[in-house]
Image (cartoon, rainbow, N blue to C red; front, side):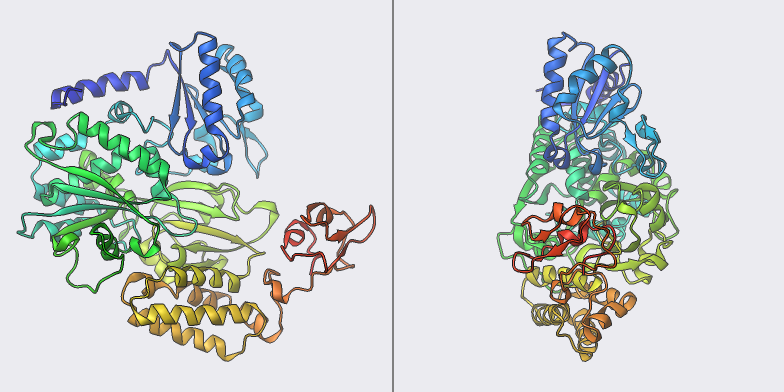
Length: 615
């Protein structure tokens, strides 16, 4: 394939834009992210193509498998353009009716429209659905709009225009200054200013330097980076090219965990396509600048998300953090100056170069500019990937975008920052999305995981879950993390089992302080955060476990009786129908009774009972 010159890139941009925006061709944009694949979108896509071909409509209808659309709770998803008609929870058998009724006869099929859980109204247009209406896509600007395996689609949306500008019109110092002016901070968790990191590395006189992309997303409940790579891999590559020009690096690596096969496959296709077109490799766009990118697959160790451990892993060594200084900008991969940014950070770079740092900085707060992508999950109606302006309150994100708490339950807390973060209770729901403001309430922005919890969540058990994860993922190099987190886990398990003692709370706090002050890397230093935040806001639950032998949320199995409260039971039989082992005896209009010999204590009956009648 012929390599691009600047003129050829511009011509390709016009041709591709004409295809994407052709008003005479109906575009069926079907979500092809991992979430929708899991719920059947591949079968929907195959059926669409079969039906279109059978009707000889290939010249009138374009079926596009996009990356993640973002609205995971509604998948499989299809959006029809023109018209912006949003269809949700599709099955292959729904396709013939949609083709006949909507595509041929022009009448959208309303039974597949989104139904607002609050107003109960059906909403046909994607842009009017609250989940989308309150977002501001920047890092996610191409989600659901392009085929991630087509470089032409990306070019048609101004792709690689920033590369041409950076390589042919800007000096490295000017690139760094533009990124600094944008106020872009690292979206991987620490929030360090990206431009400043680049400047430190740029100043090094070393001849060999590296650009790394951290796609080792390991937080429970996090899927931001995976979804960006699945939906828009070229945006990440373009960010890496611009970063390489800024520091004069000629080799880059994307470190992605093996558990992301679709993201890795699409990224590999993007690298191959960009190399064939002369947008990666030697003499990019005739600029004389060389830059090559390779994918390095990690085995899934959470600690390898820490930058120095990640670099050691690429070097073929055990992924363990090392003390800093020296910092990677001076001595990183193979002891050479290195910059490492995560997927979301790099996905913003091309737009900053193309539109200017001031444009990016026009959104956000004084100290946190731009937008932030969150993986919104847990006890919330609209589970999915959301991008909101910095400064948006947690309440807006959970209720306006997320659609609130399902089953008419009450909000209890949101865990921000994954296992390294903290739980934010209802009293602080108006806290803005801002690095400093979130830290004030005992959490961290992290990479963007946001797990919502309702009133049936035990906060002691939640702290135990995250500490179990941290302890299991500790590399074991430093004693505070290796031994301290194990001891904390033992104490939390003891409390959940009903054998906790009052002094255990003091011990948890003392251990947390020691670990935070003495652990080697960020994994250990932030590991106690879930314990500290739950002790800070939900100490009464810890005390109920210890002093009363009671779990207020009824989640800790050792503290439950597994009996039916005769005063609360409505004789509906919902618990009996839900029990997976037929351990509940019930007849119509009769009280239910749990056979404890058959009961496996799975809590299904408790989850299904709407009247809190299971103790």
